[in-house]
Image (cartoon, rainbow, N blue to C red; front, side):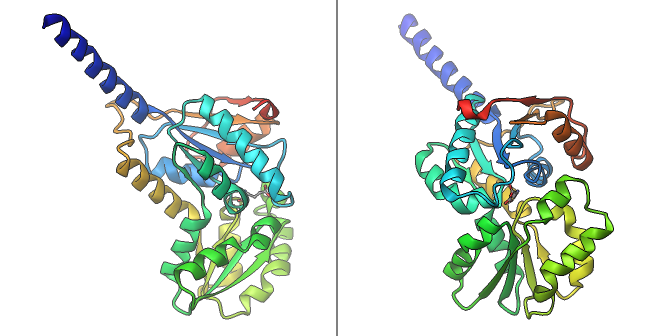
Length: 291
Ligand code: DGL
């Protein structure tokens, strides 16, 4: 009996340990580069106890001009890499990969995988009164028409217009958010949206929130900007809560954040430090093609 109860005790202890381990496991977050940091910082804000492992595919950015096959291949490799870090859930913090690869990789995964497109679509539906919504994003995201499909699936009376703004990504990455040429490019891409009857505009690329104040100044007060990051972090919170995987944290301990890239680690680190609420110490470069 003593032996048996000791055996059971061990089993319970092991179970308790594995539950604890699972909850303390990090959430994987990835993007083609730095854009996904706008989603990561929202997760840090809303879920301060969650440990994060971020991967930015800086060697293969931009995704916005790549084929669906390649974006699926890249996403699979990144998910393999993140799994080696023991992640309990994955957030695809990239609209392009969410629009083109989420369905496939979610099907293949035994842990929750969430994207930014569905939460962004829902957020815009809550905001719109006129039921006319604009979406800006990369060429691949706009061509996929995924925002329109999801929005119309939820409310077929809504109309959605899309516009690809491919130059916004390099403008952000090269630190041109405040430069005067950015205004001209915003006007070039968004003049038709500004004069349309939309009342909400989805920032359907994770780089675009970094141009938010410029876009808002240009579009005026009548058009509300929608950043899918907020709703995405809420979705993550619900999923972790529902599956009992939330990290309650430990008193006096901070969440840990690790950053990996496929190239130019120093440039990434500098950028991250300019937009995150704290300074990251290290960014590690890995060879993503090995995964
Ligand atoms: N951050 C990516 C997105 O949200 C776009 C950048 C890229 O083209 O790689 O779609």
